Each structure stands twice: as structure tokens, then as C-alpha cells.
Length: 116
Image (tube, rainbow, N blue to C red; front, side, top):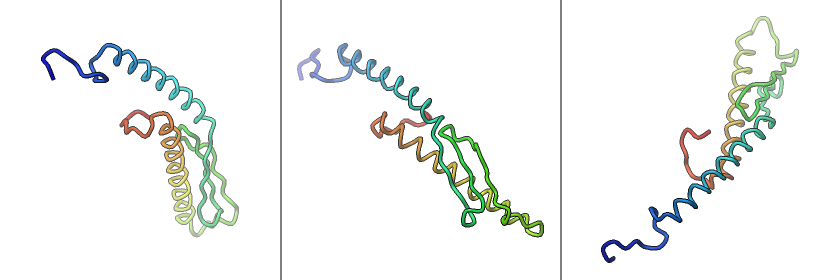
């Protein structure tokens, strides 16, 4: 390549920078819209054959816990605690998977650590 010449399509060319900035702004807007939409989506997980059910939203917040009466044994509180933990952790895993899948649609699978 001759000195001072740039190859077409190479980063650093003014047109490419402008296009890249437009793409980044578009992606940012799409991500903001997606995050607002994810706040309304819910996932559900259960443990103990469904005696404990936990719901989480796309903000990875627990929004509901249902415990069937048969799960409550005053002589075995530890079992109930374990069921709640299991269902909660699974609901949060599902919420994370949902968020990652939705954001992956926007980022095209790019790994952008700390982005969401």
C-alpha cells in the first residue's frame, strides 16, 4: 500500500466513523426500548413438584412467590427454605437467559460485557 493511502472500508475514514456512530446510536435506542419491554416480561420457575413457584421480571427482580399449603411443615422449615431458594435461583436464571436472548437480537451476538 502506498504511503498515505487508506484502503476502502477501513476504520478511520470519516464516512465509516459517521456510519458507525449512527449504528451505535440506533443500537442504544433499541436497547433502551428493549429494556423497557423486558420490565413487563415475566418468567416463572417452581420447585418441589410445583409446591413453590417464583416469578421474576426482566429487571431480574422477584415479583411473586407462591407456596402451596402442603409445602409448609413446621417440623421441616429447612425443606421449605431449600425449595424457595431453588425456585428463586431458577427464576433468576430464566430472567437472565431472557434478557440475554433479547439483547442478543440487538447486538447481533456481540459480547459487550457490562452492557446489560
